[in-house]
Length: 105
Length: 105
Image 1: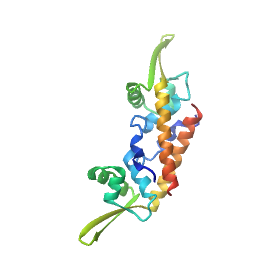
Image 2: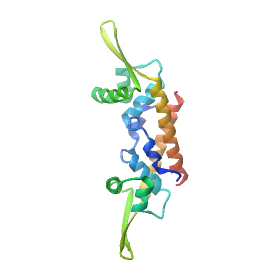
Image 3: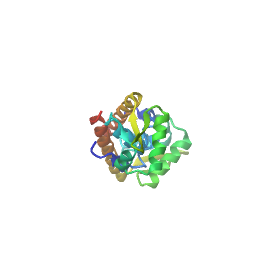
Image 4: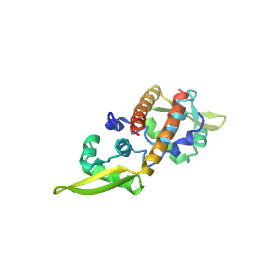
């Protein structure tokens, strides 16, 4: 066990299951993902998705664009550069913790 | 992205930073860890450690023994076999999610 306090380096923003799922999808889709698609892929209610996306948006990790396809409004989400960078750093911390936990079994 | 709903397979018990830290220490110490040592290693307050250990105990993942060293009471924590097994499964789910997220960057 090198340093168990490493867990406190885990971003509280990303270390939540729904937001982890949202970011995992968004970083794979630089062209952005439409609200309803994201909701279906993650099997979330509208309210639940909205709440967690807002948290990611407030942190500067997700950008939201709104436009129309014909008369139908469309909302699309993108991971920002900051979001990609900090999410990658979060994954690295997780990897360190897993290595510690596996090493000591 | 194979399956982003995999995030919902993450145990809510372990997917919390303090409890993740506690389990990471306990699985490395089959002889058990005394309350004050665990508290110092993780830099936690007594109350915070107690709350999270209780949650792990309720789930059957941690066992607590109490005895005396001379006249001083001693409380020691151990990971149970179930705790070791389910924690290892949790780490495997995390590894899958990281692989998905890394693969798609």
